[in-house]
Length: 235
Image (cartoon, rainbow, N blue to C red):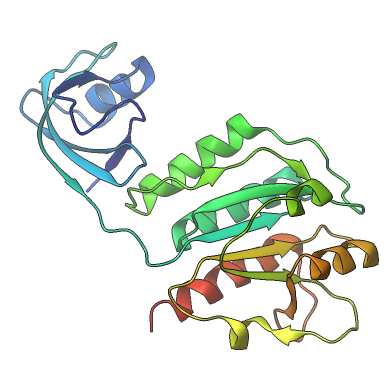
């Protein structure tokens, strides 16, 4: 099964066309023809089964023949992760977190951040590609990059955690996680969160946690946190 993504399809859509680049891929690369079946999602949980009606390399047309809303997870995972100095490392995190299962991602700009500008369009494409590859019908939401203090100045629900490397009293994230709860986890930049940021997070009800005995890169820490949440919710 190969999954396509089209954000404009809704449960009321009967016919639609693919953009030029994707039309060319369907007709010339995949060699699809009239009557062939395609599977499409809009990233909102819907899976559409469609048949090609006009296999045009510039505008491939298809007709929806069935649709179903895929079940959603019992929890919502939001990772707020500082952008890494090297873009490809953050992109790797986005890809793998989408494959494992994540709902929201917020790039946070911290005191020790070396990168303060991101490319949301490229990040979105990576999320879409990872969603299709993993055959998921839910596209993670990529929020705008935001300063750390501004991020904390909002209403959160569920359990809140901040993972950091300072030698202070911390709990084990794996021991603190509970299934079927909304979770927000903060992951800092290469230079870690500043002491001020950690104190501010704790004042805002974030629980300081450790992800293990070794010092992890930002993107690795984010994946460990993501997998830990997914593992707890598989039980």
